[in-house]
Length: 194
Image 1 (cartoon, rainbow, N blue to C red):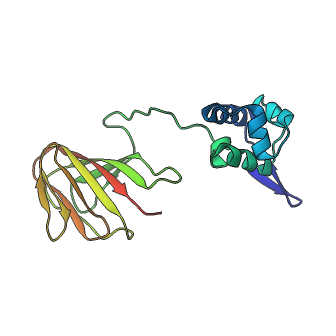
Image 2: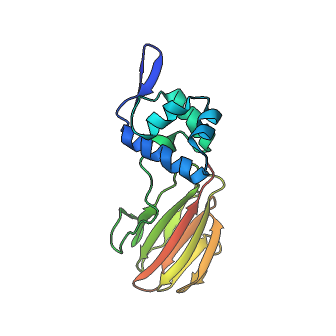
Image 3: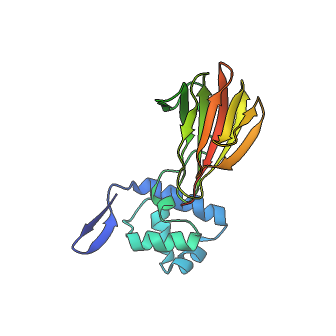
């Protein structure tokens, strides 16, 4: 998205209309005027006006200064906005299967920059347990059973859970998940330190 030529960095392939829309959205969110944002960013009001209308060729430095003035990361000014509402229907999404048990996990949402959570839909069938080695230090797993029954938690002290039951446990210790009934499903949130 950005190229460095002769020591200078400039925007390349970043749609100016997208940058313009992001600048307007963030300025509206703050309630600041063109003059206020321009002054905080150390740029001319006319420059900001041109950028918000999709004209001009903003430098990385200008966009960085505008991000600071608006209180948002640089990336929020150059990347498409994340939809406010996202729906993933049952049976959709990338599925990862276990080699040790009848266990599959569908990633529903990954960590966004600055966040520390991944969200999974789990589908489990009776058979072998999914035995997990410790994840990165500070990891925590949260699970809510949607249907069926399972045994989950720390490997040395798992808990039997049913529909609506919630469990949280350290993901940085050995842990297991094992279906006790066919058609067991659950939602898992994996919390990580960055």
